[in-house]
Image (tube, helix red, strand yellow):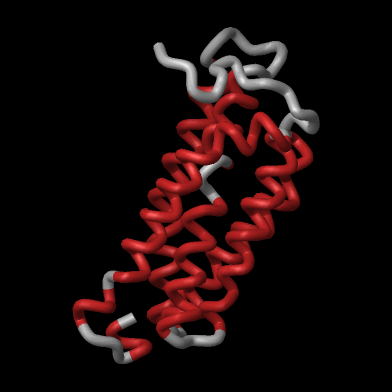
Length: 161
């Protein structure tokens, strides 16, 4: 934000801080939302919310922070749902599909930032960040693989262990 939008140093970190804050809010409210609407609907909503972050294509401090907030909240329930779905895949010993899913996610976490950086270096930061929006559309498109109904989670909301 500092180099592309020419904001002050104190405001430059606001995008990241906002993304993490909204991710936290999504994780806190996520179980109740997944229990109410189901994994598929929440992944579809989350993917589309990440794609709304396309606001970074129209650079301003406000739209950029909005894009980070929508991406943070959008992904909050997706990863736990993917873990649960992978662990419940038929034909695998318990934990095997989950382990493979974790491996694929770790590779993605290692590959995605340099890819975004390469695109940003070749053009502008906002074009690199559009990769995040494309990933949101991919999540929305793949949401159908998650459970469709309002299946209650194994851990009720508000339960203590």
